[in-house]
Image 1 (spheres, rainbow, N blue to C red):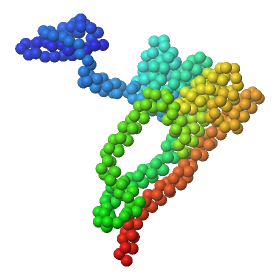
Image 2 (cartoon, helix red, strand yellow):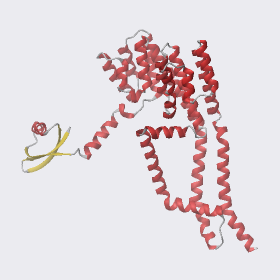
Image 3 (cartoon, rainbow, N blue to C red):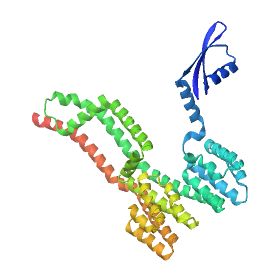
Amino acid sequence: MKFFRISYKRGKTHNNTIVKAENRIEAVKKFYEMKLGVLIKIEEIQEPISMKIEKQIEYWKNPINRGKVNDEKYIAALDQIATMLDAGMPLNVSIEETAKNSDDPQIKMIFNHILADVEKGMSLSDSAARYSKQLGHLSVSMFKLGEETGSLADAVKKLAEILQEILDNRRKFKKATRYPLFTLAAMAIAFTIVIIYVVPQFESFFKSSHMELPIPTKILLWLENALINFGPYIIINAILIAVAIGYFYNKSDKFRIIMDRFQLKIYIIGDVTYLALIGRFFYLFRVLNDAGIPLLDALNMALEVVTNRYMQERLKRIPAAVEEGRSLHEGITESELCESMVIQMIKSGEMSGSLGKMLDKVTKIYKERFNYIVENIATLIEPIMIAAIAGFVLVLAMGIFLPMWNMTNVAN
């Protein structure tokens, strides 16, 4: 579409209007249909900024464009659809009733659009694929799986169970980290207040003494000077850096892999991320394998729940090995993400024909490790918090009291 500015005369006044059309002829036609006046001049222009802003406002007003759906409400909707399908109700009726009962505007609108597509003859998976950003690729894969196997109700129910498992793990982690993060934030605020409001009270006193200040005092004075004179610039630069990292993280696969790999090396966070994702991968793989899905398809579908791009790229070696005709445990070995005990368990399951049983044990191992770390996060972070508090108190005490002790010694 192109934009045209049309100058026209209505009575004795001259006015302008902007018309969106494919070409000049169509623009002139639209202008005369508007019956605004006599056309004087028409010229092609760039899209006005006001229209761009208006377009963005309209885009974000649409509930569908709000990003990922609310997990809890989406799981409730899936449970309702699965129950109705299991009771023998048609798919379109199940979707329609679920959309009516949902109080989430985004889910309601998406399901209404899917309902319209289904009633036109489109499959549920094909329609849901148009909203994969909101519903997730796993939803599309599970819908397709249910359609291909003829057990859509079971597939939707299993999808709800998988999403519930993921949601529960996320909630556990947030709950466990709430107190440590609050404590660290309170310490940072307290330290900043002390630097800005307390240290300046002693600054003139120290400078008037004309004595050599100790290193802790110089550090405090330097921090006070940096926060007062460059505080706004520090905050602005921090925001710009965060925005830049977020931009490149979403736009560059290489940068995202680097950042995701770095995330796995962060104390506690790396272990929690690794255990949550690897456990999620084996859990979904076990569920799909038990449902009779071909091995290669089950592996590729399980990869979709691994949100860490570095781990995902490593785990892609598993289906690649299977596709080449090699064993499952060889692919897991090449991924270099699993310890030898897990590899031996998978190998034993392959050789004995009890892969599902071994996958269940592997899933339990990772789940127990994840729960242990999450339940003991406060204990694991406690040494860091104690060290931070001790460092804060030590620097503050030495920075303020050392010069005072020196002056007392000189006076004596």
